[in-house]
Picture 1 (tube, one colour):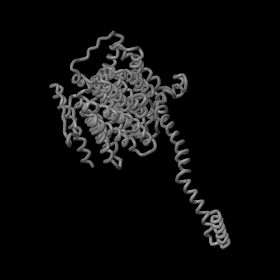
Picture 2: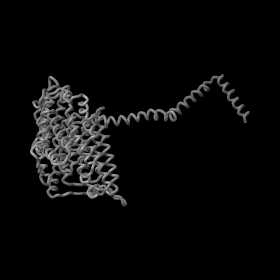
Picture 3: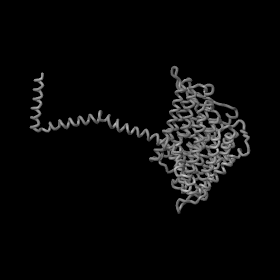
Picture 4: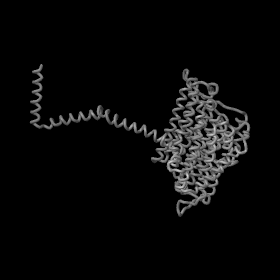
Length: 576
C-alpha cells in the first residue's frame, strides 16, 4: 500500500513537470497538436479517438496533476485511520483521469465520457462517509449534474448535422447557423450546472459532505472548473449570443449571493465552498464579457490558493476532533503557526492582496469591468461582491485566528504533522508565485488599462470597507447581527442562499414526489389493485372459503347440496 501511494504521487508530480516543459515549448513556438487514433474501422463506420494538445490543455493538465499529487500525499496522513484507503485513492485517481480526458478532448463523445465520469465519481466521493446527510448531498450533486449530462447528450445529437463530433473544426465559421445557436444554449446550460451558477447553486455547499482532501481537489481544479473550461473552448461560438448576456447577469448574481451567504455561515468548509462559488461567478462573468484568456488565468491562480485553503481547513478540523463550527475555534495562530501561515496567505490571495497570485487575475478582471461600457447594476454588483469577499475572509480570520479559543478547558493542539505541512508548502509556494509567472506566460502582450484615479483605486476602497465590516461583524453576537440586518426574515433569506435549496431542489422534488405519492396511492394501490392482483385474490379467496364449507364432510349439507343440484338439473331439463 505504501509503495502504491509513492508510485501515484511521483507519477502525477513528474507528469505535471513534463506537461509544464512541453507547454513552454508549445507556447514559444505557437504550436498545437491534434492527434487522431482510429480504434476500429468496419465498412464505412470508423470510431476515432481525438486528442488536442495546445498550451491551454497542457497548462491546465499540469495544474490538475500537481494539485492531485499534493492532495494524495496529504491524504496519506489525513486518511491514515481509514480502513478502505485503497478504494479512496482509486476513486481520486478516477476523478483526476476523468478531468484530464475532458481537458484534452476536442470531440464531444470523449467530452461526455470525461464529463459523466466526473459526475459519477463525485457522487461516490460525496457519499464516502455513509450517513443520511452524505446520501442526500450525493443525490443532490448527482441529480443537479445530470441536467448538464443530458444537455451534452443533446448537443451530440444536434452536432450530427455536421457529420463530425470534432467541434473545433466548424465552431467558428458555422456560428450563425441555427443549429449552432441551439448547441450554444445547451452548452451554456451544461456549464451552468457543472459550475453551480444560479439556479443550480445549492449542490456546491452540500458537496462538503465529502472528505476534505476531495473538497480540496473538487473545488480547486476539477469538477467545478469543468463548466468554465467548456465555455472557454466554445467561446468563439458563444461570444455574440444573447444568452451569454443572460449568463453574465446570473453569474454576477451568483457572486453576490454566495458572498452574502458566506457572511452568515459558521461551518468552516461551507464558508470556503461559498467563496469557491463566488470565484466561479467571477470566472463566468468575465468569460461572458468576451475575455476567455483572463477567465482561464483566474481559474489557474484560484486553483492553487483554494486547494491550500481547504487543506488548512482539513488540518484544523482534524485537530479539533472533527468540529467545523468556527465559533468553537480561535487563537489558532498561537498553537499551529505553520498552518496559520498557510491559511492566512491563501485567504489574502483570495482577497486579491497585491503581489499574491489572486491579485494578478482579480485586479485585471475588475479593471476590465471598469474599462468596459456596462450598466451601473453590473458594475455595482461586481465591486460589492469583491468587498464581500474581503468581508467574509476577514471575519473567518478573526474567528479562527484572533478571538479566544472556545472549545474546551484542556486541549492539546500541535503543528507537527509533516506530511500534511510539506504538501501544503508546495501549494503555498505556488500561491505566492503562480500569478506573476502565469501573467507573463499566458498573455502575448501585457494588458495596460488606463482609468481615472478613483476608479483605479475602487478595488482598494471596497476591500478596506469589507475589511472594516468583517472586523465589526466578527465581534457581534448572532442576535445583534440580525438586528443589524433589520429583520429576522431578511437575514434568514440571505443566510439560506436566497431560499435556493428550497425553491430549486427540495421544492421541485417535493412537488413531483407528492404527485407520485398520489398516483401510487390511487392507481398502484387503488384501482389497479382492485381490478388485478388484489381483486382476483379476494374473489378466489371468498370462493375457496365457500367451497371449503361443503368439503367439511357434514352429511346434512352434503345431502342438501345433492338435492339442490338435482332440483337445478330437473328445472334445466324442464325448460329445454
